[in-house]
Image 1 (spheres, rainbow, N blue to C red):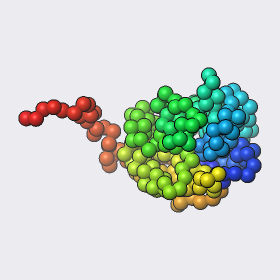
Image 2 (image 1 turned 90 degrees about the vertical axis):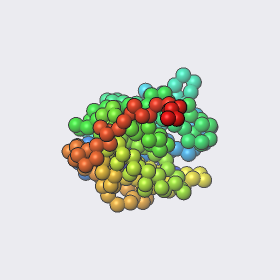
Image 3 (image 1 turned 30 degrees about the vertical axis):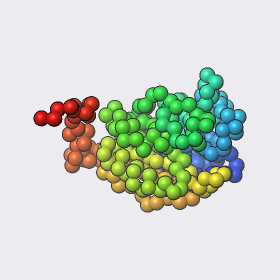
Image 4 (image 1 turned 180 degrees about the vertical axis):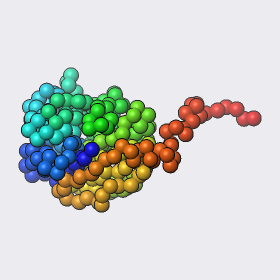
Length: 264
């Protein structure tokens, strides 16, 4: 399966107005899936007041427009928006297929500092998946991937491609350059980590969007600025990685309970 990752520059015209062009570019490149950054339909760091104003339910105009773009281009899309539900606002991502049909919706479970907690409620479902292009695709958001238990839960549930819309800011380049590679290696799956570039208010984003294979190696060079990153995924690479070191099979979960009090 060929995927496209849209690293776009924050600021300027509303991001969702640029989504159609990105989806068309993905379609022209032969991609089946387009992955976009965290809260890609509005922008991430707009402040609590503005995000509350922009928040919409999952059947609102923004989601409808994103689904229409998927249907127009025939490309499945992973997009994010501030979701309003029950008087609360969630940091939410949705995957729709190439007909615009919703396949899965996930709410960010691990909130990052005041920048998240000042506006969002945490989701309470850890593993969300859908089938696409012969792959089991899972979704998490930004900070979620920094918890090894989150990615391991996906691997144990059969996720082969984990998509991670993110808003990683400087100076945390190490997350993209090192941690994401480690997560892919230790859980033996593909990770598509898709970030913003440029600046939004006082934040400067790292860029460094990447697709990392199950051996822990990126499938392309570092990415800076506005780019559509393409990567071809092959499920047999997951099988081959497990033939070298099958971390999932070699685990000993019986050792991971409460600390032993045996002093003998």
